[in-house]
Length: 212
Image 1 (cartoon, one colour):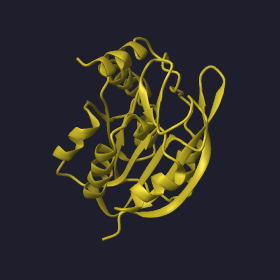
Image 2 (tube, rainbow, N blue to C red):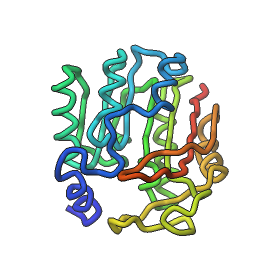
Image 3 (cartoon, rainbow, N blue to C red):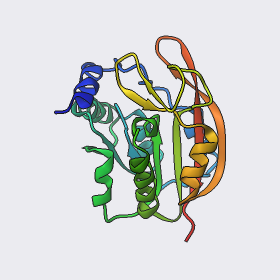
């Protein structure tokens, strides 16, 4: 087990311990469903699902959901949460670069506060290219990640979290350029995300579509 995974296993050592874990569903996600921008009954892939609250919400909304995370502890708690809610989600312990093995296509793929964990420029490009390959024609992709348009955790593209984890801080323009290489940008903006105990952090919001 590498040191980065060890740190995440420690962060997920008990339920709700991660500073980014909230059971409340972000309005940016729930409104996509409410306004039928993402239509129910489709196939969904969530990358970096943590304890599974958003995947469970989508499954309850009628989606067929696969959700992955590299942390065994996170997936353990996600499965427990799904059992408590009596919903079926295909939770898997899996690294983001392993999504290339999937042969199935998805109607909706999203990563909520995950993309900033990929710090290598080439890997970020390969990741978005993989998203395109996995999306059905007209399939949607949503990404929320820490914004380089803020001074959270310092300055520059690569910053270090209090837990010692390197984070990539892309500007909104930079992220539009990356995702726009492969997908049509439908919406992009700076939003605010919460972090325990009482932080509000600027984040990049990108909604994109895979054109045939």
